Length: 71
Image 1: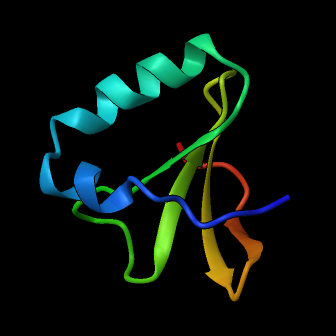
Image 2: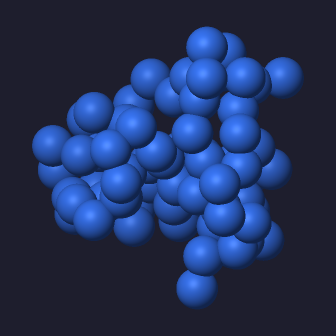
């Protein structure tokens, strides 16, 4: 079940929002997607409630993990 994140452009517009969004997501169980200024073009950071972060990209509607764990 992969869907393109809808809020990443809003998060990119307000870089201060990314940590707040991540903190709210940790309270739930669904992973969140966001971008930072240094995130490669066409990629997103997927963060799980556990704090695990992955670099992912989307090909159509298929999510591909590019890097399993971001430190």
